[in-house]
Amino acid sequence: MLLKEEHFAVFRAIWFDKAANLRGIAGSLGLALDSIAFADDSPAERARVRQALPTVSVIELGNDPALYPARIADSGVFDHLPLNFRRSSARRQLSDPCIVCCTCDNDRQLR
Image 1 (spheres, helix red, strand yellow):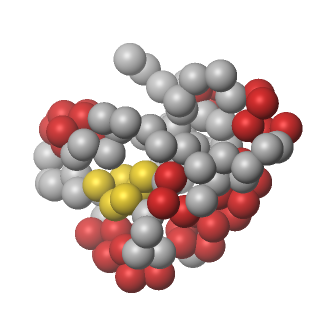
Image 2 (cartoon, rainbow, N blue to C red):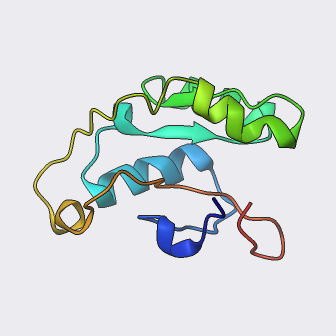
């Protein structure tokens, strides 16, 4: 499935600290950090998020982009979705599980 911007509950194309962005996304959606999954092609970014936010599920993607979908699916993170939503308008707008964060390349294209 090709992901489009409308598939994301929150889209931020900000090249600042990803751990801070994840905190902000969780807060804006009324989610606890243990309900967030993070995947990034950079081992350094994954390590930074793992260190700063130990309750966030960090998915190891490996080196081959062709295997990213399988690695995400096989991670077990999405086998169940124990979403810890507080009552909020953002929660009421979400009727299906969704991805809450993405990264963009320099041309602001989803990847």
